[in-house]
Length: 325
Image (tube, rainbow, N blue to C red; front, side, top):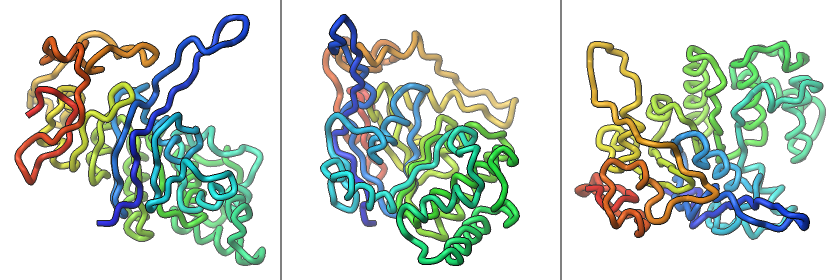
């Protein structure tokens, strides 16, 4: 399968300034040397605890935040080296759906204005009639009534607002969409509707997703492959079914053990991690996970593990752990 997007050694640090001259005194290491590929037509799920760098990584890929280092290759082209004009043209192919549908829509704009804005920016429609026809097509595509075209965001429920956000992302006919926790602000019953809509749209429009979430059951349902992040690093990547049935990294095992089961009579071992997530301003030496790891040994404190293939072929996958098997 063709690789659509490749991330190579991506780094993002946010400077912390202090003193009279506002010099940089430290930095938040939000993303540290992350690499992965996303193949055309698949969904890569990105999971991890809050604050581990998932959303920052998604924004760096689209250059909504400028990365500190590394490469982002879209169809083989390094977009980190593109100028503003070239990047603006490329944005037709790369879009984002934000987490909060309440905050990501302008309350002073009607749905027609919201969906028409990307069409105007990229000069997609040649006439007002073509513009309106395209907006109505987007409403139909995302399960919204056509009367919604003249209404404002405050007149819709959370699920309907997220449908408007999805329609806005689709307006310019992108190939790749970063879905930044698109269902976490919604009721559980509405979450299922939005996830099913996104899957239907993916099949119909041949879309590729980076799906960022902390709900592991949602990620399992929608993802082709899953990458697990901890403190700015990817620690394990595998096919969704493989990762959920046979996790290798101790952090992944702890995350999966926290998933509630529908059958209350079935008991499974719960892995409780000790301590808190270390600060990204001053991460631990060696393996970032070693202060909380149940299988850490002395060398974990000084030697940072690299991603390596674990497990027996053809079910092996990359894991960043000295003792994963």
